[in-house]
Image (cartoon, rainbow, N blue to C red; front, side, top):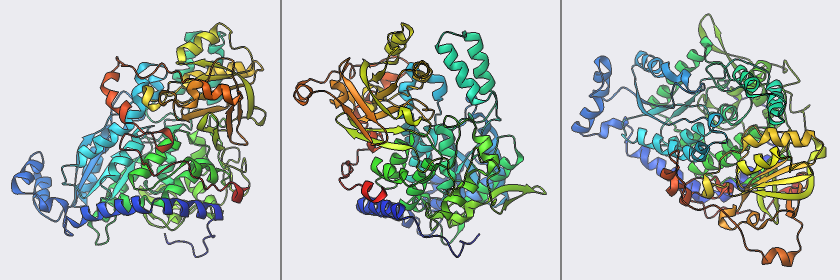
Length: 629
């Protein structure tokens, strides 16, 4: 589908932020492109395995049979690697069980060969919430990136398909694939489960259980009615934010994110992704994922996240994915874009609908179209489907069993879920960066009522979730309070999500108290109505200001002004010594194996990854607040 002839000019702030990122990234992006160009040049225009010695190639084809062995032994068949996050204990990844065979069959029909290059771990934050295993969660992203590199390191592949869905899995697969940026790559989704118990009802039962009004049996019944079949969870957390981003960043085929696992269209999209990667790999003008993910595509990802009220985890994941492509993205870039990007979607926890309702209303194709028409996305980008983001206005469909793409819908079919940029739910994206005497943090306010966006109250300091929940159960927090959970940063304990706090904090708010959370940990993609200043940087274990807080100190969190301050006399504040309980040895649930990563991990505002902090990225002095006001 060719680009439309009258694509609106890109919004001034979007253009300015993009140029700022480009200038900041000039050297790192140049170095990255030089590396992948060198990798491509080593092939000399031939298929990758043509450079293998005979013994190397013999090992590479030993497991092949029949036509695949003959094709791999020659020098004309495209070789595709499959990296899969399949396991059969997690609903989101169980559908991938049969994908490799379908991809192999499709490739064989094209005269290509596809094989499983390797697997990557996939853990579920829903299972590990509030448990020791959650301390491995964030680090699993970087383990997945390294596992992807190991899978592709045999250097026999001309393209790759990445099978992954959830929170850390997709960012890890993207970062790993970008290390082989000369290869064409398709991200391949599995899709969401069908809608179960409405999210609002589930949340209500959780709050009732936290308040002691219903028992475990009622809570379990509600949870299992919500999470009930193969596919991703249907609320708009990090997993589904991932999938939407892959659509808008052009790493999926158009509209592929939210087709359910049991829809025949899902299989057609997987086959077409295989065909498309093979086609690009065989082309004289082949391009890799490293050429696709550039400054404009990164900005498109941020805009899409903001326009849908997506997961705050992506203030780290998008930064880390961008860094893997040599692009330096900062929280201030998010903040400046948030001030001009309208909120076009309402999905739980920012509304009552789920991703199935969003998809039925027009989904990512409608979103892409309305944001393009408003000048808020860059159209002139490279995608898996070809040049130009206009291709992503179309919705995939089956006609007589054949995959096709339908022309874009003129309007959303459900304005309670999805709206045009010209008539949004809110004029801005709802993500704020907070700065002040307590450091640097982010907050999502798209589900926070205006009357709860300014909180000034005494703090109660905890160093873990258990202490908070104990105090809550004793009714010690029945007052206006800023709950501080520190020693939860990447270096302290791997930055676990603190989503288990949400029901109890919600109960306090419903009791009429002004409540906020301040933490150097994560609050997850499901953060909602409670104002939560999260990812506070520097973290407590590195002597960040949050480590100086004492019970009773008054903290002022102003989400609208973007400030986070402690109201303590300056002389007293400066004279305090930081206090931390973190930094010791941690054992159990495999946590001891990750001690090295806790020592290596970078700051949250630099992506919290272990591949070397980007020392050139600091909080920019140049900010666009004046130009966006």
